Length: 118
Image 1: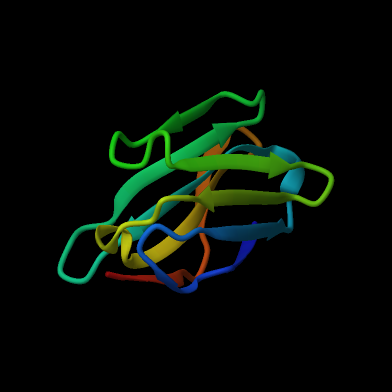
Image 2: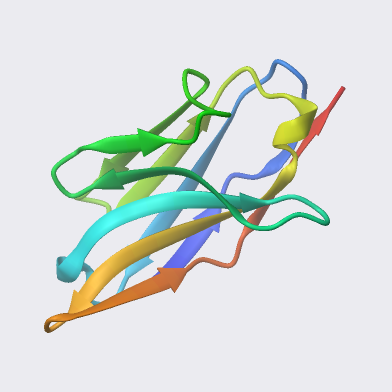
């Protein structure tokens, strides 16, 4: 599975951005799609994921501000980010979990930079 992320950019604090990530390849076997981020000098951290049944999970730091969704017809996962804060500045990576036969695999997108100015 290959992933192509887009939608990052520069925004002022309090603003919004929507990230998109489109999957290609063996898309039938994807069971979860999600987003992570990595700020300068910090480890990559979980932001949100959405399972094939629609169940979502969020990190406490973004809950009530970010919304993850997916369009299976377009093989795309979205991250709507509202009320952005300077501490949200990071490279955002999409991630999918999928199966090759019975073997679980994971794939990462290339990352898209989000910069929030104060």
